[in-house]
Amino acid sequence: MTSRVPSVACIGVIGKHNNPLHISLFPPEERAPLEFQFLLSSCLDIFEARLPHKTADQDFGLLQAVDERLAMYGWLTNTGVKFVIVVDMEGRPATAFDSKSSTAVGLRDADLKPAFRALQTAYIMLLRNPFYNPDEHSPLPSRANAEQRADQRVGSTQITSQKFIKEVKRIGDAWAPGVTNI
Image 1 (cartoon, helix red, strand yellow):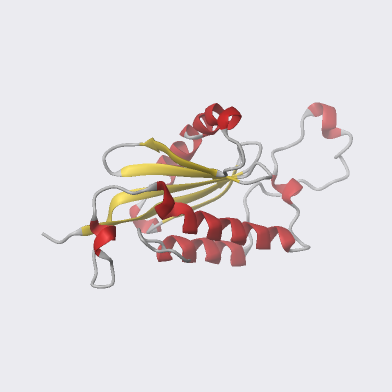
Image 2: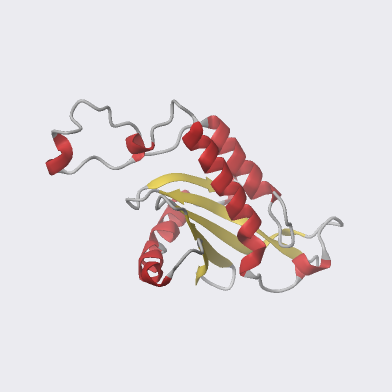
């Protein structure tokens, strides 16, 4: 029996209005997109429940263990955008490059901090793009704000930046327990 190490199953970026901005599956051909959309939606209540108790720390740690295989971890940005990483505890076969600590059972919250920092950096780089307008990726405005924003184009609620999508894929592929820099 070959040993297996945890790996990223899904990375989700959720907007400040709880709208999905981006979802990446790892590997995409082996994952059911609808299942992971439901999983990401299920963690939003956990963010809301913990929000009043959080101070300066943006790491929400383990949000929920879905079953014995999948666990969801969360991170909140200063702008209210949420990053969620779903970890598959039986993700991939161990290789010679995997450390002994990565084959141990369980994860520490600190194991995911490098991935969350890399995601936040990628999102900041996206926000620095002068052609990216985060307000275009919010849900349609309410009726009260419709007149104010009638002249503004409301685009897709999904992030379409290929540079950002490639960076998220790189982060998901590069992460492993014990990795300190992504």
